[in-house]
Length: 488
Image (cartoon, rainbow, N blue to C red):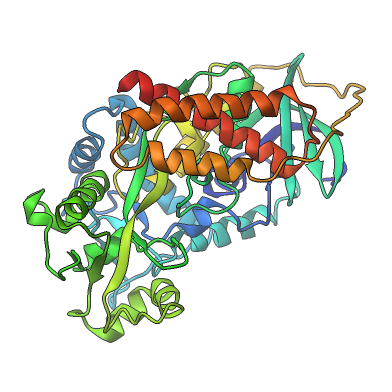
């Protein structure tokens, strides 16, 4: 398909697992364009370590048990229908990506090697070493690049989405050039909001762009204050926050306080394998009890060769800071990791705006409730991006008016963005709405964010990537703190 085409059937914003798997559901006669804000591998999906939770063995496991674990982790605020769809349909999607060439680790007998993570009562997580997301992105990208009906645009930012007759006009910025693409349907797969925080496991792309764009179109945003803080991010002196996967604890690691003592028995009978929100809060409470933020993971009691083979990426990451996971304690502390809320969608990923869909972390399907069960995120990306594509295909089969290209004059010039605004937003969020929210800081922070948002919207700034990301961060921060203030 011509890379200069300005009219497509489906525009997919975001190039993680949800975006690519969704694109692969369409037939060759459907034109699809995928936008990647940065490189092809800059996404939350690519950083996912743990694996994919799916009931692939119905002898030792069951759909009912996976549903139960998901509800317990989500504090029973999950949507029952969405959870049922996730758990029952998910295994087939996992099998489909294996057919596409995505690899998962296997044991000596050639059977899938399933691991255990916090909140799960069975070993049901398939994985590829400790870089499952990167392997899924690799496999799906190889499939996408073979499809002639799919255009893939790197380093392309969606500035705004405008409703037009029979679809949308997407105003894009690519390599300093502004232009428009028209689409009949749009799928937002833009990931989370991690960069609204000072410390996050998320990549630079996670600035909440899709949520801001949907919000501007009038789509309903739900539970954006449902933020997950992962309990075990690497805690370095320079602030580096790469993830130490849940599966490290699943394989037997102990969580220690500043006195090198296990302490989870004070807070939860499930110990280190309690759900993420429980472990994160336990660490904060223990830090207040001991007066120290020094915490560690200890997996030195496990076989060294097994650890190097099972966790090569984590071993390498820790080694860069002089930590040998086979001999040394791993310094950890909670940091922002995942968004459970987002753009409200139905069971087919449809938003409240006609022809607009949202999938993956930017969407609120209801499957996670108030806290995501480990390794349910990649499964959600697969299941609900497929369902979005299936719904679009049904609409196309029933007949639909295709969008037409219209003349448009884009003027996105203006003043440069003042330095420091994005840093200010992150500092506000870190103070106000971390693991245990601060009601006073939330109220004060909301006023500060409101002023920043008015400043960004009130002046004529050049529509650069930095400006658009600052606008997205401010918009998401405002919605989060507004919800938090109402809930508090």
